[in-house]
Structure formats: C-alpha cells, structure tokens
Length: 477
Ligand SMILES: [Zn+2]
Image 1 (tube, protein in one colour):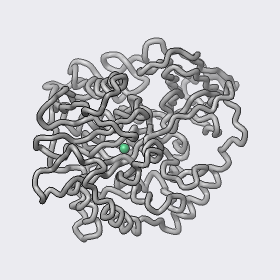
Image 2 (image 1 turned 30 degrees about the horizontal axis):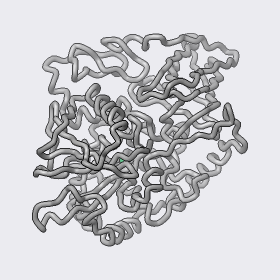
Image 3 (image 1 turned 90 degrees about the vertical axis):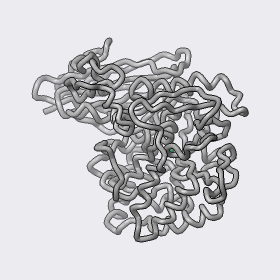
Image 4 (image 1 turned 60 degrees about the vertical axis):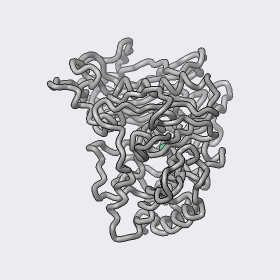
C-alpha cells in the first residue's frame, strides 16, 4: 500500500454550516488549489550539492536493477500502492501529498506558507478539533452508497489493529459527528478531526484499498498524521529528485515547517507505514523520485512499510496520551514500552515477545552463522488468502563478537511497492525499536546487510501467496 494525500476543499466556513456530505469532489475550488500548489512548487528545488549527490545515487541505483528477472513460476504479479491507486482512479489531482483531503482552512494555511508567518502552517497538523485524548472514541459509519459488505471485515480488522496497540477506540454510529466510510475508486482521508458539528468527514476506501496496512495508513491520517517524508527533518535522510517529478506533483513533497511542529520524539523511519514508496510520483518509473541518502542507502528499496511499525504505534500512543492509562510504570527489555491496554505487560518491537520483551517470538528458528557462506530459503506455499499475515521468524546467530552478514534474494511471487502481500523484514540494528529492512522485489539486487550485534532476526510473511526468499549468510568480524 502506499500513501497519497488528498486535498478536498470543502465549502467555505464563512458561508455558514458546512455540508460535509458533499466534501469530496464537490464544492472544491480546484482552480484555486492548483494555482496555490503551483506557486508552492516554485520553492521546491535542490542545491547543486544535492543534485550532485542524486547523480551518484541514480548511477548506483541503475546497477541494482536486474535486467531479466526470473521470479518463480514466471509470476509478475504486482499490487498497486495508494498513490498508484489514486492516480489510476483520476483522484490524485484532487489530493494533497497523494491521499490527503484538505479543508478550506487547511488550504488557506498552505497559502500562508509564502507569508512571513510560516508557523501558522503547523496548524495543518492541528486543525483545532480533537478526537480527544486517553481512550479517544472515533465514531464511524458507512455511507449509504457503501454497499460492499465484503470489505467490512478488512476495514474492521484495521480498526482492531489500532485498538489492539493503542488506546484509540472505534464505535459504529448512525448519528452525531463521525467518520463516514465512502465509496471511491481511491483511498484518501482528511488529516485529523476537521469539525465538531453534526455531520461527517469522509474516509474514502475503494476496492483497491482493501489491505490492513492501507486502511491503517488512512486511519493514521484521520488521527492527525501527515507523511514521514513531509517531516521537516526529511532532507537529512532522503534526497528528492525533483527532476523526475512532474510539475503538478512536486507539491506532494512539500515540507511541514519546523516551527511548533512536533515529531513526538519519533525518529525518521524509511519503513514507516506513513512513508512514500521511492517511486511514488516518479515521472520515469524506472528511476526513484526519493533516494535514501548515502548513509542510509540500504533502505532504498525498503521505503513504505506494509503495516504500522513499532514507532508508528508509539507515535499514535503519544498523540493521544495513551500512557495516562497506566498509573504505575513497569520496565521492559529490548526497547519495549508499557502496553496501554494491559499495564502489567510490555508491547514489544518486532522480533521480541513475552510480558517483558525478553523472549523471541514463539516458533523462532535459530540458525548458526559460521565463517562459511551458507544459503537457506524461507518458503510459504500458496494458501488461502487471508486478511492477517502468516509469519515465520528466523534468528541468525554468529559466534560472540562476530556479526551476521546477509544478502537476501527474492524469488517471488506476488509483491507491491509496500511489500504488502509477501516478503521478509530484516532486523539488523542493536536498537530493536526501529523497523527493519523490508524486502520483497525480485527485480532488484538487494543490498548486503551486516548486523550490529551477533544476531540478525528475519520475519518472513505472506498473506497467502507463494513466497520464497533465499538468504545467503555468514559470520564476519
Ligand atoms: Zn497518505
């Protein structure tokens, strides 16, 4: 899945009560929006130093592309990500950052970006309305036109995901202010609660948006989050190749201003569920629009997480002050945090389990890495496609004092930009909290990864498609 921000302009607040039933594609001053965004784009250019760095990164990227890839079964299945879905649906042009709907107030705030009072734009992330804090309840309903009942289990599974890991609660409602799930070809949401009055705010979830990760992404917008690559610190982590982005799309890479914007002490994560895929909005889709800077180059193919990461979850918990649910604190190992839904237990980063995050997940297979290169395959046979993932964990262990070095090779079969249907996630840092490197594309040579400690954990997963990943590994000094 992938994410785009959609800007739908609602009727002016000055004109009286807003008809939120008709916000999307109605009463939208697209002319004004496009004019505004065009002037915004004038500011989006790179320094000569960054352009030189991009040239080198582009050359290096070209060398990773496999000319004649041969996935197992000759499969070339690919699922689209959010930006691709919205582009195909023709909705992209009405959206901000690909999948974000904006209110008239928010558009005005964007316009203020040209004024000296840039800090006003921080209000974009804080529209002045709140779903509440500490166990906020978000009422929702399906629009009358939303007849596809078979989608509801996936939508409700995404809501349950957020309920399981945070203090957010969703409640079906037929009256009062609420989020209304609407029929659309694309996937898009407003950012935050946009009003307090009677009515609804739209959450567009078309047929192609039906994965837990995509819906969790849109719900993150509804909570109040923008995209990771809009963070004001993103230029420390990625280079945006504006030469490979059509004018008219460049505004999707605008930055949130630093003034008063809170990052909630959450680090920049390439694998976040709220990060774009590296080719989103690329004019020439054989080349990235987003390059990981040289220090982070292993993440080039690993942008856009299939599910909210540990830090995505922590961010939502901070946003809603969920920790206030726990009167006394407990200590957790390996970066775990107190579970706001069960204060006696810890919520663990991927690869750790148990009440205090001291154990590896049940069924983890331990594999000894030696100085000799070895090869193993993680393999899932094709099975009934489900909403939830089937997973298998592998723990590669080098002798004490040594490190694990691995080169993964994806053999198929189904993939998407966000690695949604199948793939592996490699945890190689000493700090267990950041998301691992997500790997799923067989058309590129994957980087060789070296662990920071003598352990490297791999989570292999699939939604039901055949999934085979070959891992070459050895112990190194
Ligand atoms: Zn998005």
